[in-house]
Amino acid sequence: MSTIDTGLTLLKSAAGRVSAANGWMGNAFKGWMPTGLYARALLIMIVPMVILQTVVAFVFMERHWNTVTRRLSAAVVQDIAALIDVYKSYPQDKDRAQLKSIGQRLQLVVDFLPPGDMPPPGPKPFFSLLDQTLSVQLGRQIGRSFWIDTVGRSNLVEIRIQLDDAVMRVFAQRSAAYASNSEIFLFWMVGTSSILLIVAVLFLRNQIKPILRLADAAESFGKGREAPNFRPRGAREVRRAAVAFLEMKSRIERTMEQRTAMLAGVSHDLRTILTRFKLELELIGDSPELEGMRKDVDEMSMMLEDYLAFARGDSGEQSQPTDMAQALEELRSDAERHGHTATVAFHGLPVVTVKPASFKRCLANLVTNAARYGKSIAITGQRDHRYLTVTIDDDGPGIPVHLREDVFKPFLRLDNARNQDEGGTGLGLAIARDIARSHGGDITLGDSPMGGLRASVRIPV
Image (tube, rainbow, N blue to C red; front, side):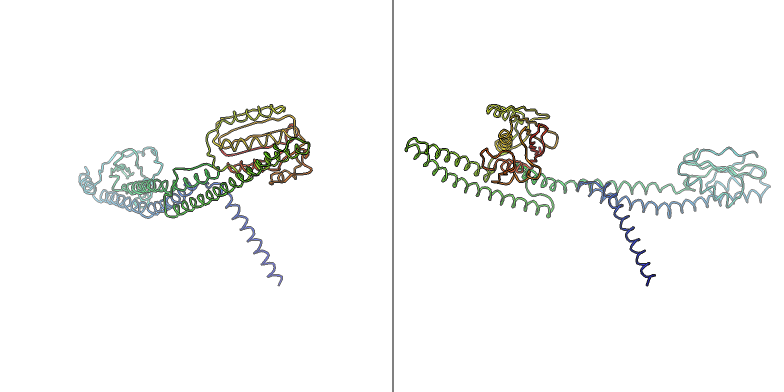
């Protein structure tokens, strides 16, 4: 029993190591993988093709090119060995005319040099298959000192063999000892693969474009912008996704239009009643009690406007390029007119595509919130290639960290947050965040270097 337990423990340990190794390799491989669909699709096509071509080239080189070259070289060396045998058997051929005639029939140019040392070895080519094969065959079939040159003349191979009383020099055609047409096969293999890859890349690019357009349209819609030229294109599945997106977009827009129409009717009816109240109060006259009622009616009007603004959102307004530096300067002027000290700074290109009225309302709510609880306000804008960030700092009491998300809830006023002696409906921050999110961004709260609260608005540009 203990042996079985030990074996199971070892198996579990080995499985754990294998799993950890697979996880490490997967993470390492994932780090090298491209993130884009186009690049991954190209990789899916290119890697198998390269592997296949490499295997085919290796098999061809090993099984065909090397084998044919060895056989051709062996045949040339056999002819040279036969000439050497003839040279030994017929010493009466003093001028060696018969031997040279036999060499011509074998497509070899044969002559004899005076006896002496062989030349020093010449330079070897980088891929010296012919040099290696000839050397092996000469050593195996002839067994004498030899010297070969496969580089000097492009179409000829020079072979020198040390005989007893002379040096035999043989010039053979390179094509007779070497499979020289193999490069043509490699050229056609690489050429056709390149053409196939080019066609595949062009076709794949056209298939990826509809997906990119769909992503851009969805991103624009998420930012509250329109994509007027978008329509379903591409493959059937991509068209299906595009049609589903357009239907979803239409349903959302219809819902927003219906809500806006309903709120417009409610707003008209409530404003009519409040207007009657104001007229009746004016007709009654002046008294301390009536003055309090007028303040209540005015406060109800302000609350009604805030409620409708929160429910209506920014529907109906179109995005357009807006000078954010100028918009922030207007907010600073408004804050100073109400008796607050305000500064403004902007860094980067100021023109940003937003819904100007709603986004200004978002920033104005934040500035109003800062002015309500602080004396000094600092407004800073920064735009880079991806985001527009606006920070609003004040020197007020701030908000505790654990309550900073709660203040964005509609109609919620925190008893311990800041100073609750001030009036308000509890919708200012909720409206601001709703507008920021309709632009594809968000609002976060943090500690201000001025000692109070920092509200940061960030939206994509």
